[in-house]
Amino acid sequence: MWTPTRLSPLDEFASAFIADIDDHTQVRSEALASAVRSRYDLPPFPGIDDLRVLCGALGIPLWNLPAAVPETWGTNFAYGDEVHIGVQSGLRLQAQESTIVHEIREALENAFHRVKPAYVPLSTHDNRQMNGVSDRFAGYMLMETDASRALLRELGFDFAEFARRTGRSLPAVLLRLQQLFPASAGSTPVIGTWLFDADWPRVESRQAQLTDLEARYAAKLHGFTQRKGKMTGQVFPRIGSRLADFSVLREAVRRERPCSATITGMGLLPDTDYLVLAEPILPRGVPWRMLVTAVRLDGVPDIAPLLARLRPDDLGERPQGL
Image (cartoon, rainbow, N blue to C red; front, side):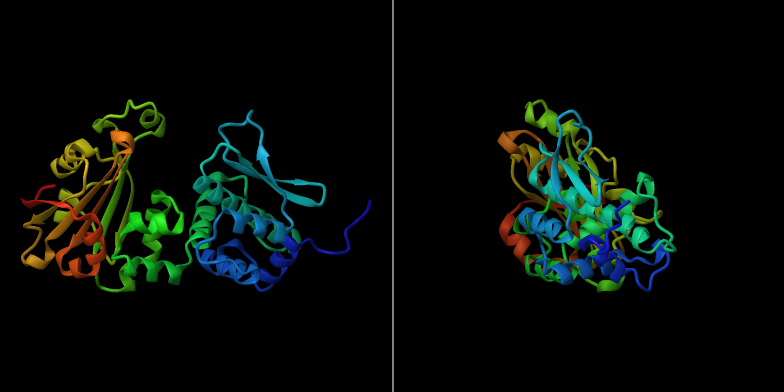
């Protein structure tokens, strides 16, 4: 049987990266993403064309999956001596980008073990373990850390505008925020943010109602907490909360424009109160999404560009209630 005498581009990269690593627990997502970005000269916020070029440089052919597998966003598989990636052709552009990077991470994990048999890999067939690793890697690849932090500060922590500027989806942005601004990254602004979402088929068919929107994504920046016993845990949404349960959010949908309110009584000092911004996203007037951002008052100067863009209707003070 013929044996290749030269490593594929994917295996060459894997061999160099894994040289001093013996176990999957030693692979850091950010370090791996940084190595890929540096080796293949990717921009801080790569788009679909950049990712196609990357796959070509790694020697990975890209395919459209047949329509017969509509429930699968993407897959990677070996065919002969090549690793291939298949992506569902009907996906929106942002989903295609994240899926390609997700599959590249799985292909890399398999390559690490292929080029170094002593390496202890993650099972790429164990979705429960592998998906989280691949999603973290995708976040680092699609939103480079220093560039993302700088742009978010420049935009006044305007997450919707950041998503537009970088071509990323709002859910992906919220998932990445937690890594970008942990409690150790600075003191202000202290922010909690939630994305309420309705199922897209109901939005597309114009059947979505206010009661369909629930909080599906959240991020806590600079130490924002909803620990037991904290007023923030009682007042603000949690994953699974219904938009219809919050009067400020209902009013923003009714007015079809951003609204703000100051939530008072959150602590002994005024600076522990919060300014809440509710930005409805209503395609053709149909409820789809609501981005809710709660900013502790000592951090309001940091969000001046966001306030300038939204120009929200001020709903006044709300004592301990949203």
